[in-house]
Length: 357
Image (cartoon, rainbow, N blue to C red):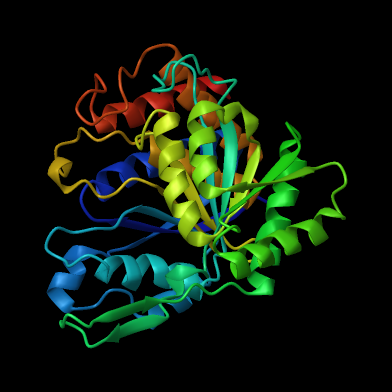
């Protein structure tokens, strides 16, 4: 019996609908090649809907999402909607309500992609950042006192639970074991200043490491990590860190792999519904022009298939992306500089998917 997966599709804002269109095109193609089915269910959540209805994401949608196999997201962010409204009302709500406690960000330089780091090659940049995704500063616990006055106080509380930290660290150890490359895990923190939080992460990692004797455990401060991600990216295999630090260092990682045009991410609930997306924004200035690079979105679709258990299909998509870049078909990852349109890139990847099978 052919396996069927129900995928919720949120095009979102700006270039989101255009890039998700190409991602869906590629997913349909690879599902035919690998003999499984994908049922796509479209949702219109985003800035336009919010401006018309004042609604971001109703609770009823969350209940629908729980019945899906995965969610495929384009981009969220509208120039006419105040910052934070859509991000909190859609992205964070999905992550928290579906307990997507892992944010997974591969940092991988593909052949044919220009790297801004001198003398670094694809062999040097191939690691993964595991970011805790539902705790830390993003819980939104805090407030203002005497707001708007010279005595104003603003607080934001970073929440780290033993359960949240441990499940994230265990996931990272399992990933290092599965990758079977350098077999190392680096815990990134700021334990020399954020002593209580750092102590919890380091103590938990040390205790969990006893179950993974083949994985080398290292610790690094986040500021030093930023330096080493530029100077010696080849040192890393799997990085695990808290929500805020992970948010920051993954953008740094993205530029070292060639930019946001290729960087994909997953919001993972290992036992539930996960969501996959490019890590770039909605780029409204490029919306509707058919010039945005869809490779990050297509790559996110490949990540989705890997998590769903369709490893062969995921590998085919990655090989198709590598072929398009290494053989010079796509000239640049920047919008308007690819040498072809958004839809032509999608067609190219579909062509290679069918050839690679």
